[in-house]
Image (cartoon, rainbow, N blue to C red; front, side):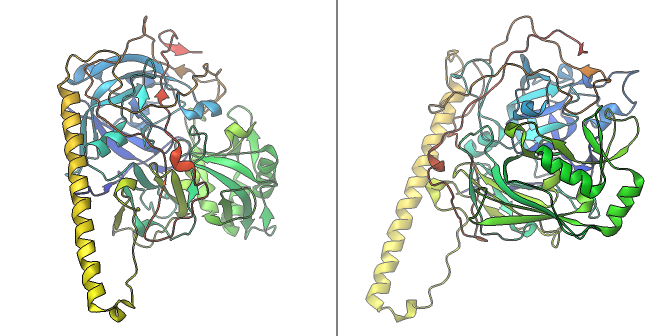
Length: 544
């Protein structure tokens, strides 16, 4: 029987030092320690706060709670967890390095539970990192499909999402997500694994093939950005179309300089060189809130022509405040940043307030639709089935002409359908039986050699780049940056890891709500690369 999609209920907290974002609760370790995290559409891992992320006498008193630790916790205490298995300190090695986000993580394996209610999902021996650097103020839960590797590309470890599929806990490598909107009476976020919630978006006909460069899989061609309803009339804010990576890990929208200039002049912003943020004074803020313009982001698969989708965001979605360590006191700002090259063109969490993203990693396509806030109390989950079991979420309309067929033809059709269904059931049963035998064998091989690939198919290697210099990612350079110490020697993955067999694919979605428009028919042939972590040689303590 095919597993059902799973809806992860968001917390009642609205967190962040760069806006108010609806978080989710994870429990890590044994006994469990609770943390609030943000979903990351670009990440593969689970990150929570390290106790060294908040320093007594330097950081505000409420720093641990502000960074996601739920009192009385002040960060993940590895010594208090009986199931913690350490693996070493590695660079976070995330896609956001391109934007100046840096830091190390204390990596290991432990139990990770999603949610706190009776429907919570619990997996043991999962890759887990605790982080101290303030580039990422809260932790994250990765929604990407890539396996994780600590040493060579020959030892990939399935990530959380893949393990859920391997254990038949969700139907496929897929998700549906919208970030919630604090300005809409705190309308909650919605996150579904293995499918989507059809009540949380308006249907659309556009599905986009994932990018060939799978370090930026959710890439859209942003054709136009327009502000309508402001005091100066309608304004085009994007002089030229650009390809943008959609990434919920970060809050800001990174744009070319000429586009940023248009935003600055339209909304009366001022640039703060100390934080790289764009501020707005009280007079201009009140003027914008009074006129309440709407911003329209139009995108497609190419920079001109073709099918397009437009997502509208009210000005309220950009009316944010930045706090510590950007500023000692909450300061009004507008969440845009200057991108210095095309590798930095990124659309962050601000966009997800009004956009619902469905990603089908196995079919390598994704959909971005307008979020709906009309039916928040009712969940309607739709499964995205894996390709081998049929087309995702397809509804066949009844054939009104069937009554005109002869009885012999109808009987023939019925018999054929029964035989076909029987064959399909047998194939699925054999597949499940073989998978379970393989999983049992992997777990039983307690003395497996270091060179095991944990049953993964051949994978394309991902180039490991040198660490980038610190470039003011999320805070002024006047503030101390907390980092974790590095091991004297790199520690390798435990050969006894209970990693599970997996097929590693990449991205996005189809549904019974809209037909699939695949822009790149060759996208399905691509394989996911290994997400490799680099051992960090940096010294213990804070970097200055």
